[in-house]
Image (cartoon, rainbow, N blue to C red; front, side, top):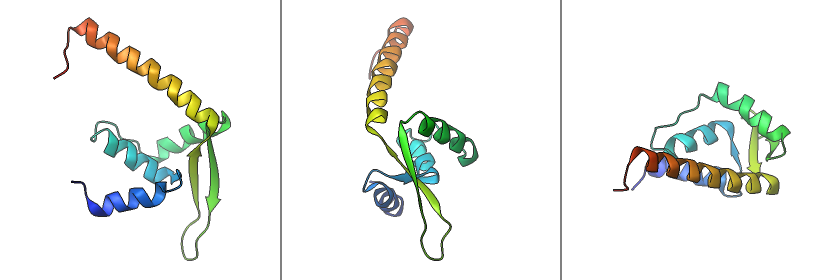
Length: 105
């Protein structure tokens, strides 16, 4: 079972499919079991680039007493691109696994 505080904050930010940069970085780390980490400063240029490509859409949210935050969500084009990329990565990992003579546990 996961950390209830972290899990609750992850659900809160993603209820409508939107996360801000800091939460995106935490989700990447969590979902990769800590194998992948992003410093927020290096993540934002990537978010801006994929937003320019139309794969995500950002919007500013201001709450009383808090800094404004930019929340991102996948666009329809982003979902299509993600599906294509997942297929390519799966084929790549399969090829590496085969070439290295590895078997699934």
